[in-house]
Every structure is written in structure tokens, then in C-alpha cells.
Length: 406
Image 1 (cartoon, rainbow, N blue to C red):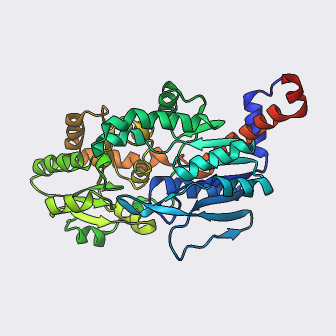
Image 2 (image 1 turned 45 degrees about the horizontal axis):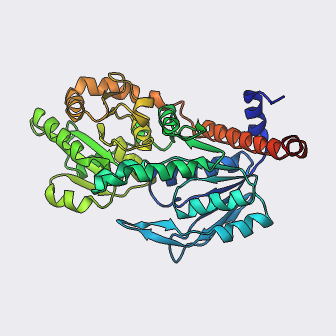
Image 3 (image 1 turned 135 degrees about the vertical axis):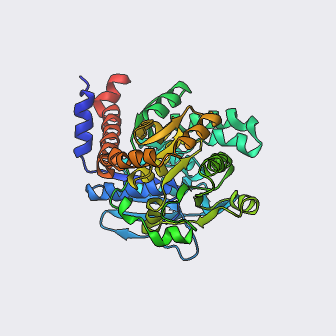
């Protein structure tokens, strides 16, 4: 008789695993996938699991790290067009297969769907290793932003094939998990995203930083944080800000934190906005906390870590009702939401934030709304699911199981 799912999950969570994590992006690279993967690797190590991290070499001075229970394997990679600071891992099936044949991991966790990730899935399958994939990026939705809308269906079919080669696909929200299964992905489970509430905090607010933006104590500062690229829909944030600024009689500033292929054109067109560039760590946390309002206009996210970071920093959020905003923002409680894709409603939500009293009311509840979103709990959930996959794989491949199905 099969072990009940809850007991199986608990047994998997308690087991010490050797996990091979394959990803094409990792800290110190700055993006949501890298940050999430770094947090989860650190958490798995704290729980006593062993992690082998396979990733592209990030530069000439990049060397593999190692510590108790942790080793890095660096692969070859090529710069991604438009994102020269990021690498796309090259196929490495033969190398991975030889390495894992000598020292077999309990499970292979494939974070990204690039050539390196694809070869990792193939190598694991040839060695009869269990595989867990992760869905982090709506690549199929990006095509329309780059004039290649015709690619949407082929890319979606490719993603479906990739993830169905694994035993399990992980998604950050129940909403996305449902969408993926409706598109034909066979088994999808949810592993949520956490937020570091010690790092992101209203206590990091800086009057000096606000002054550097040309903001007085009473000036409304709206902030956008993330990659500056067409799929991030930055034009809508700028239009919403312009309407809000006009409503306030001009006493407002918009700060854009991040970098990317859309920055140069926007900066040339709108030199009046404040461009802070890429920020990390306590510096990034101070930028969040020193603003008064967070604008999140993107419609292509699988989650959006910036939403929970903004809330933890005490900022009310204006966003669409999906992904992280749908999970953590309650309209009129800690932010204002608009139906997905309704740009007029998004602008209207931003205009509601012209009320200083409403902003103060929502800001007072923003941080409390994410205090329970703990990275340790998220990591324990991941470990439990990985253990469940390993146990199921072992049962399927046990001698008596193979005899019964022969």
C-alpha cells in the first residue's frame, strides 16, 4: 500500500539529501532567479543537506567554491544578447553524465530551462536519476515585447516538453501552478518565495538618499525596482507617475532602480526621472525604504520578488492582480490592485495613492502582511518535496517493484 502523501512528505523532509542544483544564473548576478536560488541553496545547507551547484563561469576571475556539504562545478557559458552580464550555459550532457555516474546525487534540481538545464535533464534521465524542474520565467510571454509574437506557441510547447521530462515541476504560486497544468504540464507543486525581513525594513529610510533624488520630506517618491527591459512594461509606470505628479501639483519624484536594454532609450527620453542603476544588499534596501510608493506594472512575471521586498520595506504597492501581488496585496489594505492588463485601472490605482492619508494607512499594514513569509519555511517545503520525489523514485525502482511490473 502506498504511503499517504502527508507521511511521505514528512519522511522526505527529514531525510538528508545530496542534491545537484543546475542553474544558469546565481549570485552575485542580480535577478529574481539568482536571488531565489541562492537563498534556497543556503537554506538546504543549513538543514544539513549536501548541495552540488552546477552553473556557468561568470567571469575570468570566477572560481568554484567549496565548503562543508557544498561544492561548485563551473561550466562554459556565453553572454546572453542584450544582457552581457548574464551567461547562458552551454550543453554539458556528457560531462554531467560522467560526473553523476561516479557520484550519484539523490535528485537533480534544474532551475533554468536553457541549454545547460536541458542537458542536465537528459543526463539525469540516462542515469535513471529523479529530476525536479522549476518554472521561473514566462519566456513564451516575452516574445510579443520583442516583435516575435509568432514564437509564443513554439516556445510554450518547448517549455511543456522540458518540464514534462522531470518527475515534478515547481511553481511559486498556486495560480501559476494551475495555469501550467492547464497548458499540459503533468505534475506541478508550489514552493513559495520568501523575503528577508531583516534586510528589507522601513528602518533603513534615509533622508540623505531622498535629498539626493531632489525630494523634500513631504515629496511623494514612487519607485520601480527591476530589470529595465521591454517586458517589464516600464512605460505604464511612467504614465501612471506623470498623472500622479500632475494631480499633486508637481511635487513627486520617480526613482528607477535597475539596469537593462531599455534604460538608455528611456533615460534619453525622460532625463527628468531618477536612474539609480543596479543596487544590492543594504543599499537596495535603503532605496526601497526611502520611497513612499512602489509601482509594479509588469504583466509577465511568474512571481515578482520585488513586491514582497517593497512590502517588507513598508511601501504600499500598486500592481496588477496576479503573481506576487495577488498573493500578498489586498486592495485597500496594503496596496491598490488593477485587473491584469487593464492599464486605465492601473493608472487609477496609482492616482488613489495621491492621498497622503491613504498612503500612510496602507504603509502601516504593508510590512505586517509579509512577516510570515519566511525563507526557512520555504526551504523546508522544498526539502520535503525533493525527499518525496526521491522516495517515489526508489519505490518505483525497487527490485520487487520491477519484478511486479515485468
